[in-house]
Structure formats: C-alpha cells, structure tokens
Image 1 (cartoon, rainbow, N blue to C red):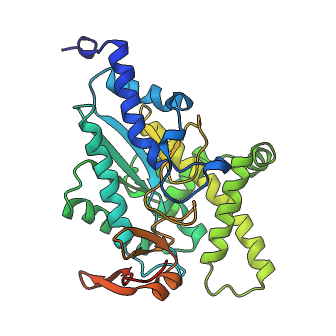
Image 2 (image 1 turned 60 degrees about the vertical axis):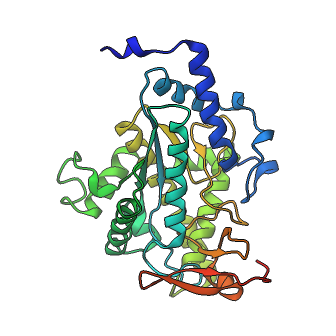
Length: 334
C-alpha cells in the first residue's frame, strides 16, 4: 500500500513529534552560555518551538508511520593520553552510553509504534592521522563497539565507519586503504581552511568548536618532541584539519541518510541543524566517554572524569578481564 495511505492527520503528527522531542530535550548538549552544563538539563526551560528543524525531520517519519532514523557521528577511539582513559578499547563509558541511546530509541516506540533506530557513525578513521592514533587501534575500538551492540542486545543501534564506505573511486589518494579513503573524503567534501577561518570570525560557535578541539589535541599529546609553544601551534593547525574532516564526514553521512535527524556530541544552539546530545553526566560540557573514565559515585550514578581524577576518588573495577571503571566508596566526594 502506498505510504500516503498511512498518513496521519496534521494535529496527530504534530503532537507525536512534540512528544518525541520532549524525550530528547532533557539530554540536550547546549551551546547557550546559560545552559552550558555537563549535568542534567532542565527541559522545562526549553520550548519545542525552538527546534523547528528537528520537528520537521521527525514529521517526515511520523507522517509516514516509519521508524525515526537518527545519525550520530561519535565514538571515534580512545584518547592516547593514559591520564584520561583506561586503555584503547571501549569500556564502561561506551557501554553505558550505547545502552542509553538504545533506551532512548525504545522509549520513542512507546509514543511512535514504528519506533526509532540510531546509526552510530564512528569517525575514528576519519581523524586517525590528525589525532595520532593508529588505524589498527581504531579498528579494534570500533570492532568492540559492534560487539557490545550484539552482546548487550542493543537492537535499536547500528555502527557505521569509514570501512563501510565502498563507493569511492579507486586511485584517489591511494588504494582502498584508510589513507586513500581519508584523502578521497577530504577532497570531495572538506571545506577550505580559508572558509573555516572566515566562519570563525563571523560565528562564535565555530570558534568555540575550534578552541575545544585545540584543547583536546593539546591534552592528548604524548611524547611531543618540541616546546610547549610549538605543540600549541601544531595543535591549532591540526584542529583545522579535524574540523574539515568532521564537516566532510557529516556531509557524507547526510548523503547516505538525507532524511535522518542529525545528532551531535558537540554543544549545539537552539535551532541548529544538529541536535547536541549528552551521553553521560560530566562537569565539562565537552567531556565524552572516549576522553574520560567512568566513576560510579556512591549513590550509583556514573560520572565522567579524567582517569587520574577518578583514580583518586574510587577503586578500579575490572570487567571481562579488562579495566572498566572506578567505583567510589560510600562517604567519598567526586
């Protein structure tokens, strides 16, 4: 039967979209200064009318009685800085975050029976040369993400990475290798550095993103042979490359999934094309599971901290023979 035969009336579509958006709002990662917090947001301060693009995307699926599709570029690889993370493979942070995203999709099914599906667009290979993480480490990280999805029965999630891109022309930047695919992606989709610099002069959010990425690259640097000022210059240069590749990866994802509601782990303003989403509580709005370690507080709530900080506050817990997270003993303070 043609999809139009299933279309709901506008009032019902609008109500369903509003209900779905209200599920997302408490987890919004906001760029507005008054809401720049790593903790739980007060969704009562938000209005769904501030998010017309997201309502439009939701209506596309709701009106057709189709599953809502989300895309989330995220989960690239673990930071190479051992003071921030426990190792190279996904651990409690990724496991809890993936479970949260799966529950979010499941909750949508109670409002919209066709449900929802989220595609995790793992972008580690997109940035590997810029963040100084070997492709072999990223392969292992992403393979473990896929294993968690299967092992924990996260049936609303899928994982997509640069290895799944098969339609690029051979011979551009090399053979069918990570290096060749990065070169092809950059050549096809990346904006110029001059364009990014112009955007930073005109747009505070782009400047904040550049500064945030520069900070991450500086913090993640290990065994840099030069001076601190030389490292800062190097990180600023690589930050442009990271943003170029990020934009290129987003454009490629949009080509593959043009109707999807686009999520981001970076803070986003109301009305932006992407909806910023917070995976776990953290004192820093930029914190992610792959740049931090989980501390389970005495009250049971997970908290993202640098490994060195979590180690001072809790005891190390292993899972499946590997370091997983820290657990705070009763009476401690994060």
